Structure formats: structure tokens, C-alpha cells
Image (cartoon, rainbow, N blue to C red; front, side, top):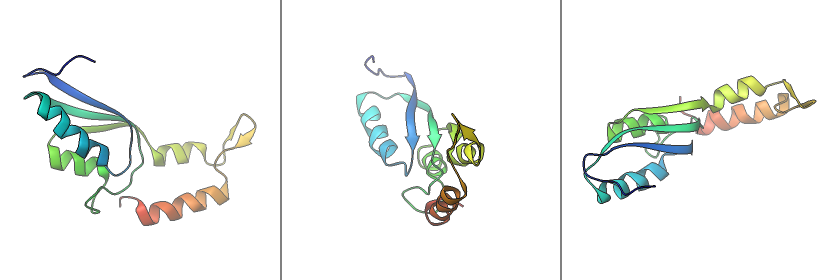
Length: 112
């Protein structure tokens, strides 16, 4: 990409957000290059897990901490609901057993 310049408007694009740790590393790197305006974060998949502080979702925490909007194209909940008991190429991707395991995982690590 191009070098970030003063007064640039920057949109951060990320493949997946889990805890928000990568954004905590990325924002200072961007800000060290120039006094730019970070206008938002777009992620392809929000795993819907709690952030580093452990109280709200990682995307909510990023929004609160850095003050820019956060958006996800799709959430893990949406992916799970779509694939649950639905055949894909002749095979069910998320069956009852996997759904139960996913539910248990999100009960422990998911944002409430």
C-alpha cells in the first residue's frame, strides 16, 4: 500500500477479530506513521468473543477504546445458524454434536 500521510482517512480491514489484540498492535503503528484519522474497522468475521478486558465483545471494546466505528460482514453466530443441520456438498457441516460443542465454547469465551 501507500505511505500514510497526515490528514489521511484510514479504514482498517481485518480478516477476523477474536480478542482485538491485533488492533491493539495496529493502531499505534498507524499513528506512528502520521497524524491520520482512523475512520473505522471492517472485519470479515467477528468471532463474537470477549475482548482483552473480558467484559464486552472485542469489537465493542475496540470501538470504546479507540473511538472509531467497528463493523463485521458476518458473525460466528450467523455462520453457525446458517450451517447448522444444513447440507453443503452433500454433508452437514455443523451437526448436533458440533453445535453443542460450539455452544459450550461460546458460553465460556463468548461475549454476552
